[in-house]
Image (tube, rainbow, N blue to C red; front, top):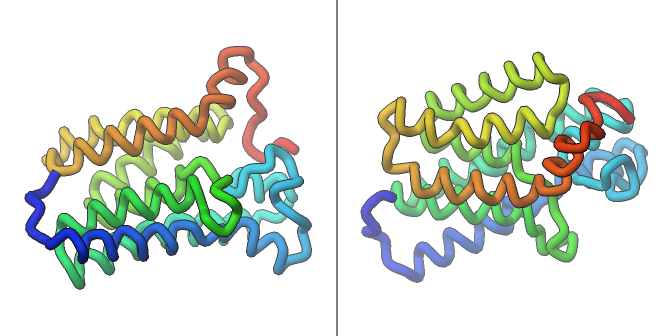
Length: 201
């Protein structure tokens, strides 16, 4: 963790604003605008890009992926620019929590993978790119989005250590644990061999 130099009221304000930004459910918004139905009633009911892809609309899925990542990255970049590095890590954590537990959807959100990667790209882009590459390689080999997400999340702290970003290790461990917790059902299906592959309805 970076040294905490910002006063508590400012960090609390950063945390709140980042949470609200992270809470924006872009998957739900995009599918409604495009007339694809209520995303929470489609496929797994998850609000992320993988479930949007189950509607058959690749453009909507791509837009969801980009915007879910962008909201985490923007929260981090704004916090760093206007406050400091300690605020950037606070923003990373609370924007991620916002996606997982959005106030707009009664705290029933997504699994956070895109937002996780977006925050990493903004905090330390070499780490973010390495995690993206890990996700892409695993997805290409297995064709299972959840497995790719789990492997990528687990690799994040290894990349942080290897790329000299030890200041992020505490945050990385915490976010990774949350990713695994939100993927508990996926892990059970992976163990049972019933987890659907990318694009499968």
